[in-house]
Image (cartoon, rainbow, N blue to C red; front, side, top):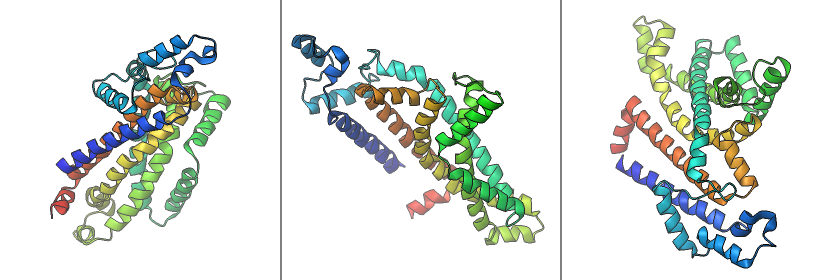
Length: 308
């Protein structure tokens, strides 16, 4: 476990270097970007003063070390666009993104377990074939297209949900569905394959031989072993979910971190982009670490296999 923690810290360290270099090598002068359209008319002393205020006039290595030190102290600098602290702006928008991400993961896991188990109960029967066809069709659609379809049907046609999201429960229903449905059907497909593999093993056949009902044997014996690989996948898919959040929040006009970073990229707000990359990267590494811990709790054999 110590090695896993060290690799996580190392990954975050590499992430800070990459995000700093990506912004450092980007074209354009950040000081002139702050001044906008008036950069060609203001005195040169003003431009130099802005460079000194934001430490743009220092060597890159010094600025990187200062930036990393400030990041670990919770100071992520000031937005070049608004002049507010990046930390304050991210915290203002974080609750909406957390509610959207948490709701999507919960919906995806519930959908994956229910649909995957149901598919195995009706293996190679009409319901199983219908579920598999729907899964392939939905997985072929990008999340933004699912979001637009939901928006058209439930907001434009039947007017059941608000057209623009506001971060409350009603405004989050469609975005959660747009992100959670495809993820859930992907988990269902993985769980179905894993369950089918489990029900052909000796321990499951022994449970049936003792008179246990097929469905109870699936739930009490096969599901626990089959769900283990799903836990790992959920951690790995978290990065894809955060990428989808950017698009979905923009489509539904949600005041979350995704729409915030979209605006920052459009206006080349470098300090916000750096803060976002470190924030999301750290969240992904943490989720993978938590997935490993959950995996060890569910199936202690994974720890023993690594020891041997």
